Length: 229
Length: 229
DNA sequence: TTTTATAAAAATGTAGATATTTTTATAAGC
DNA sequence: GCTTATAAAAATATCTACATTTTTATAAAA
Image (cartoon, rainbow over all chains, first blue to last red):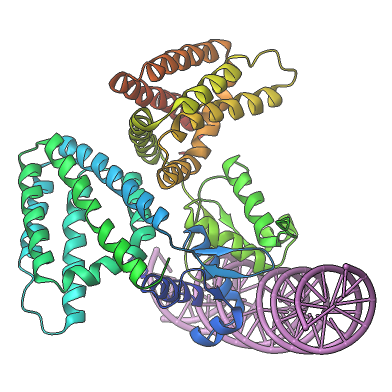
């Protein structure tokens, strides 16, 4: 029997918690992460804390200067634009490969996830709505990308996604609570699904790139409003 | 005045050293990295060592299982194939963007680096030859990629490059010490440069993808010969 | 052979010592 | 007075050594 992963060590927990907090905007961009504060906030020693921070430095969510500690990575309009452009281009490539390589099961999964996403309605709390819609939305796009059948391309995709997560979170709050915005997205997803299932690579990839770029102006507004840049 | 980077901490040094050793094949894939061995080998305490390992786990060069320590990441034919495929596809995308976006300075840099690469001859020691050729080879490809003008795409490119580095190192030793192989590469680079400067995107991208895939069969042979898989 | 008990080895975590940076206070020069 | 330079103090980051927990190896018993 395969042994279930044992007790996760403290660094792993700290890593997850801190990453989540950074993405959710608990810290402001550029904020100093003092070891003494982190120790009390997450209730552990410096060892595990430093390990968690080291990983986040690797992922570029935190910056480090030797002997001068750690800071939350900065955010900027410039980064936002490049990040979303890179994501759109990569997603286009991945989709092109998926259309060339994907089989029947790939098509079926896309339809399944598209259906689940379109059925998100009438949820009680706002937070619940945000969670459910985002989960299904990611599942839908994940199902499309999976067809490229390349673990390493999917990994780079996931990495860019993580990088964008802080920006994306701003957009998510704007979109999910607007019936109009949600409806626009629903139509885009339906059209995208049609083009993909018709294996029209050129059309589908263009639509995908445009679909990924639509949040950019919205995020720009929120960034200026909240004084984050 | 910008303050020069101060004393780098021990974790940074350990990270560089360990990463280099893994890439150069000092450890065999899957080998256990015992803390006590690492401590004596790199002459450090556990703290900095664990920080360095945490970063390498993020980069997937090392794997970790909680309470059971660290291991050098495995290598496999399957991973080799996916890695090189992903690299070729991404490099094709980056080149397509570079041809669309690159300016005069981009063209000039490519010509400059291509020239430097073609002039690598008559070096004394074998190791020196390997270093110089590889440095200029990377500079040439780097100059091409730079035209895409996207820090994040270049970053994902660098990450995939790092992932492939262990495999690539095997190929490099085979190629640099074969006059015939070097000459073949020289012709490929010249043809590639021509297509790029002619801004023939379709042709250049196809050539680039093929160029990046040529090492795969060679590396497969070396891997089986050396019993690394 | 398989299981259980025991001992050794290894990984992880904490606390305190050391070194570095940043802040604050003080004094000198313009 | 205002700025700049210097020195002491505080805050902070980093590292090592030791203590604790968990895993792995070994040997005895079923």
